[in-house]
Image (cartoon, rainbow, N blue to C red; front, side, top):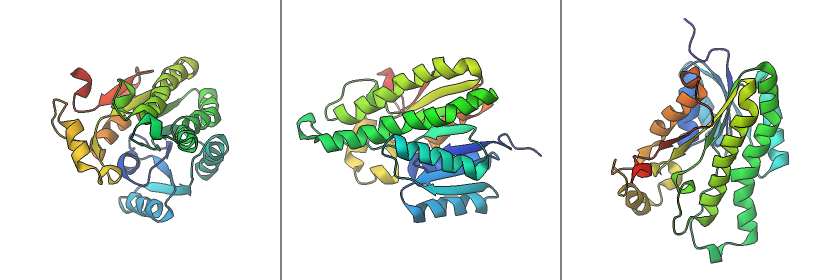
Length: 248
């Protein structure tokens, strides 16, 4: 029996933990061959082992995404491993919090390098080939604080707001040639990366109707929807997965 994503190859950046790991496992479970990228080689190998233990196919490519050169190199390595990339999930990101006055230029450049430049040049490298084939999907992971002003979120929120606009611009650019580009906008989510800030996570969650943090698996389900033909008529959308924070 054919699985939903049999014959499909996926690249998930930041796929060694949290939302990225949950997404990689979910897409592999639907039959996709998944290339997981991240900085931590041991964690990357463990995710691939999990995929294979469940009967799926996975690969790991170590990548420290900082901008154009690293993004294009990852895209080429991933494509060489599996032949072509049909689905790109731009999940890797940094989420610094703090006052604007405390941000050094090097920190600013590092955050924008990972959150904006890396996805930009991954799309520049991979989307044209998708468009030539007339088929593909790109899912960007943004954040609810890209949608409204929040104290301490100037650097993180603005970088992800750029990704929201890019999602819409890329949908306009590549959609007519069969490449769907969309985004998910998570709210407070319990992951390894947020484990050290439980009070801040709970405080953010208390502002939303769900009154709890989300899970990585819940966000991954939204990414799966946008990555598959379940969302075949969805282009340029930003899907909130934030416990209802967008509503209040």
